[in-house]
Figure 1 (tube, rainbow, N blue to C red):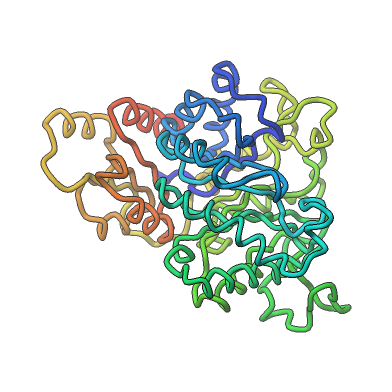
Figure 2: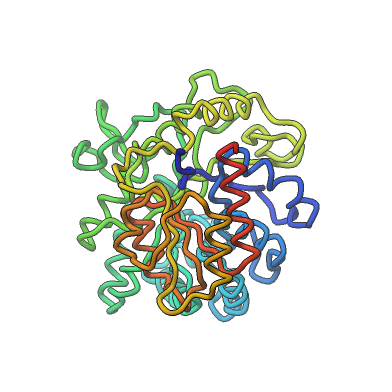
Length: 411
C-alpha cells in the first residue's frame, strides 16, 4: 500500500466568503479525491473562519493554513490576539499574518519612505510571532513578493538578522516561512540551486546568462538566505504556487510540478505546496487560475491530475527509504481497552507504539492525542523528517482518519 501524499494542497478561494456547511459538503470530497493534505484559507482580523468548517477539514486530515491578509498598518497584535487564541484552540497550527510586506502598496506612503523599513516591520511582526507560539502554533513569517519593491531576499535576511540581534533565537528556531512558488512564465528549473549556482545575480540585477529567485524555485534562494543567517534551513509552506493559468497547460507545467511535489524532488524543507487556485467566482481576476469553475465544473487539468494520482506513481510514492509504511503514535501512560480496540479496528495497516524514534522510521504517522499529550515539537520533528503526519484527538477524528485512508487507498 502506498502512503498518502503529505505535501500537496490548494489555495481555496481568493476571498473569505465560502465557509458554510454547504461549501464544506461540496468541496471536501473533491479535496480528498485530489489527495490534498493542506488548504490555504483567507480570513480577516475581525471575521473568523467558522469552527465547523475548520473542524471538518482537520478531522479529514487536511491541514488548514489561515491567511489574515492586510497592509502593514491594518493589522496589530492586540487586534488579532483573540483570533489567534481561537484558531489555536480549534487545532489550527499555521496562521499567516500580513501580505507581501516588501511591496510599496502594502505600506502607507509616508511609512514606506522612512528609513529602517524592515526594522519597523519587525517591530510589528515580533509580537504576532510570539502570540502564535504562545497559542501552540508555528510562528509564520509572511510571504514576500519575489523581487518586489524591496528586494525579497534582502528583506528576509535583514528581518532575520534583526530578530537574532534582539535576542529571539529560540523563536526563530521555530519559525516557518510562507512563500510563493509561481512560475512567472519561466521554466520550472529557473533559479535552480540558488545563489551558489548563480553567484553573479544581485538585487535588481540579473546579468544575461544568469538566473534569480523570481520563478518556481524561490525556495532554493530562501533556504540559502536562512542557512547563511541562522546556520539552518527553515521549514517553508508554499501558500500559492504554479503557473498563472490552468485553463491551458500546454507545457505540462502542472503535471511536472505534481511529480516534483510528490516524488521527493522538492527539498524536505518545503512542508506543503498549495496550488493556486482551487476555485474562484466568475468575474474574479483569478478565475483563469482556478482548477474548478464550480464544484461540478472541473477544468481539464483536474482530470489530468487525477489520472496522474490514480496511476500509482504519484499517489504518495515518496522515495524516503523509510522502514515502515504507517505508525500510530500513542501518548505515554495507560491506554484504555476501548482505545486499543478502536485503534486496532480502524487503523489496520499501522504499527502501534509509543516511541517517537520508531515513528520517525515511517512514511506516515498518525498521532493519537492532543498537544498536551504529545507536544507540537514531536509533530514538527516528524514533519521535518519527511513523515506524513495526521493528528487525531478523539474517536470522531479516529473514524475520520480511517475513512480518509480508506477513501484514498481505494479499498
